[in-house]
Length: 302
Image 1 (tube, one colour):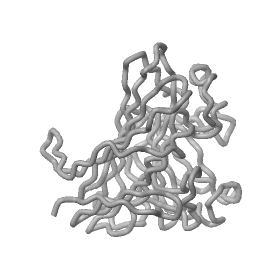
Image 2: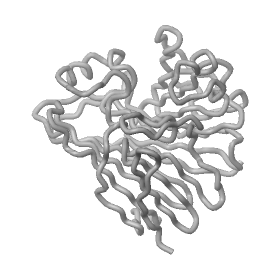
Image 3: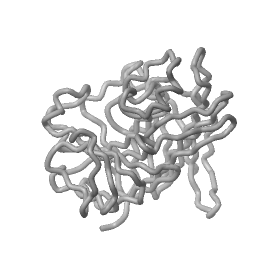
Image 4: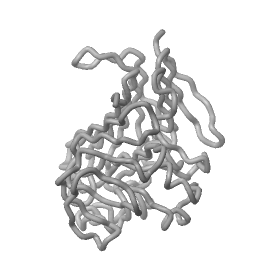
């Protein structure tokens, strides 16, 4: 059976659901946000979505894979070149940009996409419509590939302006975990990182990443990662392309009460591993050039 595409409504938001015999995916048109992916062999949602999530127009949903674009994090914490590029932008760039609250258009659905390695996927392409008075002029396209093995998401940014544009971005992936205190992320040993919770100091990771307090770090590298969360029968594998920064985040109980659509104990059940171009890894895009940021997620056996 070829994968099928259906439209639906989740409260105020339009959604696209792709169903195949052995996997299932749901993407919100607001923000081009993937909120569900599961397979026949891993039937629980591979992504964490808060039970307090609200599907309201103009508000980003807490969970899944929100898109942070054309800036990541707090606008004022970005490099000066990024702030200069968007000095005349009329959209709200205060936190994580504005793409996550915009309505995307369906550009293409191909239920039988074949890649260069002859692997079969369903592909979904969403475009950010041209925005009036958005300066600098950037185009954003989001491409999804789904199969029974996992999924990938690509952000393709094209510079249609006459000047070089500096921007930052991230795929802000929320993952479920059975217990944050026993969760481990491997692949970042000896990678330097900026600790946003300790005065933006630079440190070096020793061994696996573990959680015993709040974590908000920008790692200066994007190696392939494995997350052992015990929320599934396997290990979550995350690969990246077009990125040289990885953000790891968990608010812990000290920050949980400050977060919207977030229960006080939700920090125990989730973590974020974000494929990014952030901080020192912001992108300088010349006129006419494009940049692609991609993540791939698979489930590997223990």
